[in-house]
Length: 369
Image (cartoon, rainbow, N blue to C red; front, top):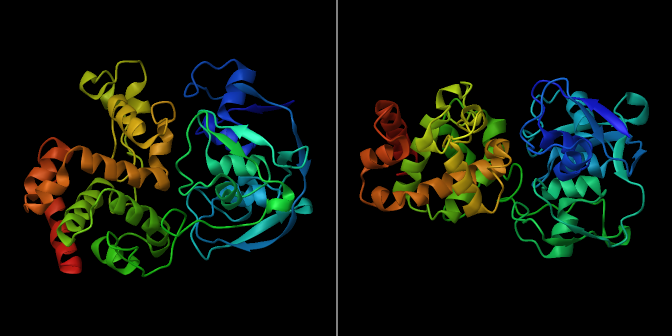
C-alpha cells in the first residue's frame, strides 16, 4: 500500500481525488471517524487496488464541462501532475479554451492510479463525499460517459446509495462528452444562458475587478443557479448580483479570508462543536456561514455540506447555494417590490456595507435595466 504524509491545506476529499480513491475508503483504511479531522504530518495509507498507467503526454484544450480530475483520469495522469505542469494554483479554476500540457511518463507527471481491470460495465454505489468527476477519474472514464450511461442530466446531482453503471471501454469510456454549458466549467463567452442569465460582458461591467478567465469559468454556474432560483427578471438579477458582488469581493473570494475563529461557539449559527467556527466559516459568493446553514443548504441541494464544508466554495456548488439562500429568504418578492434595503437586511442580518451594495445595485441597473 502507498503511504502519504498530510501537508498543510490538505483535505481528505482532495486526497481521495488525487489518489483516485474515495473518502470512505481512506476513512476505513486509516480508522478516521471524522473526515474533516486530519492533521499535518499524519501518515495515511492509500488503499490498494489500482495500478499505474503512464500518460502519453501531449496537450489538451479545456472544453465546457471539464474538470481537472476528469481530464487527469482520461489521460492517465493525476490532478497534482497536471497542476504542476501547467502552473495551476487552484485545481478548481480552469476555463474553456485553456491549453493544458499533459505530462508524459518521462516528464515526471507521475502515473495515475487507474483501475487494474478494464471497466466492463461494472456497477458502483455512490458513497458520502463522492463526485461524478472523481468516480470518472477512478474508473478511467469520463463524466459525460457516466451521465449518458446512467441518464444523469445534472452531473452535480448524485446521491449516497445511488447505483451507477460504469460504461465499458466499448461504450465510450475515456472519451469526452461534455454536458451542457450551463452545468460545467466555462461556457460560451458573451452568451446570456437563457431567460435567467447574463453575459460575460455584462458580468464584468458590474464587477470590473473580475478577470475574464474567472468570468468565463463562473458564468455557466451563475446562470444555472439564477435559472433554478427564478432570478429571471432584470430587477431580481440586479439585486442578486449586487449582493454577490459585495459579499465576495466581485466573486474574487470564494472563502472568507479570516480564519473563522470569531464564529466559534456561535449557537445562533449552529456552531456547537469545537472547531465549528473555522470549519464552517464563510464560503461561496453569498458567504454561507455556520454549521446550521451548511446543514440546511446541503439537505436542500442533496450534498453533504456538513460533512464536507469545503465543497461550498466549489463553483458548481457555491452558486447553487447562493440561489438556495436567496429563495430560502423569499428575496424574489422583495426584489419585485424594489425593496433593496430589506434584501440587504435578510442577507446580512443588518445593513453592513449598504453603501457598497447600493453602488453595485446602481451599476447592475445601468447594465441590465
